[in-house]
Amino acid sequence: MTIANDSALVLFSGGQDSATCLAWALERFARVETVGFDYGQRHVVELAMREKLRAAMAALKAAWKERLGEDHVVKLDALAAISETALTRDTAIEMAADGLPTTFVPGRNLIFFCFAGALAYRRGARHLVAGMCETDYSGYPDCRDDTVKAMQVALGLGLDKRFVIHTPLMWIDKAATFALAEAIGGKALLDLVIEDSHSCYLGDRAKRHDWGYGCGTCPACQLRAQGFAKFKRDETA
Ligand code: ZN
Image 1 (tube, rainbow, N blue to C red):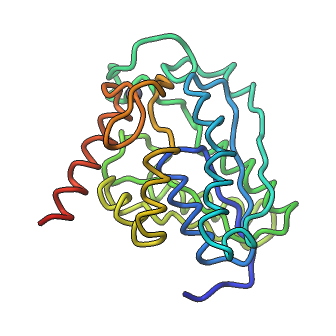
Image 2 (tube, protein in one colour):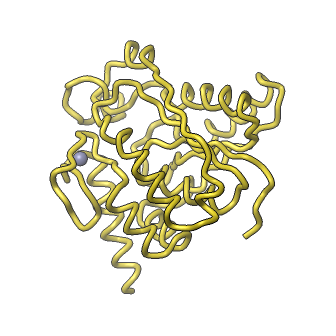
């Protein structure tokens, strides 16, 4: 694997997707920093898992420990203030009349990329790595490949600096994301992702399933459970 003599900033929420992206980046870049956003999400436990995941990943490979740099947490209270969704308010997680789940925080990823770009600029990182995916996603328009590509252009122009946004999960499904973790870091990384990454919208870490912790019924849990079942089927096929 070629290591670019470059720095990367990983948008790292502590979920399965961003944990896999962090490992992907640690394989490729000489220095990797992470950024998380605190916007009053109810699954704030996801943020709490971040440090544990980072430490566990650094312990997996000596090279990863060497490359893993600082973590940044950006508080986005303003995003919480303008959002009225099931992720930040105590409302039911369901499909709304506009066809999007009530977990949709309008423009969330656009805002994340703006802050990540500003931080990357300050930190001298040319590469942004993020876990957006439009394969088996919930239909959030700011997860689309075209949106991400437009953000790359906008950041490059607005900051007058060349940025590359990498989205290694864009065209793979959740099953393939589990497989990717195993391909990058073997069973040790796969087990770590299952045990310590968090996806459940309700922040449930009491119920342990073969795919990790979660309520088992929210859309994020269902996606993860179905993906893991398919990953296991593919493995034995
Ligand atoms: Zn759940």
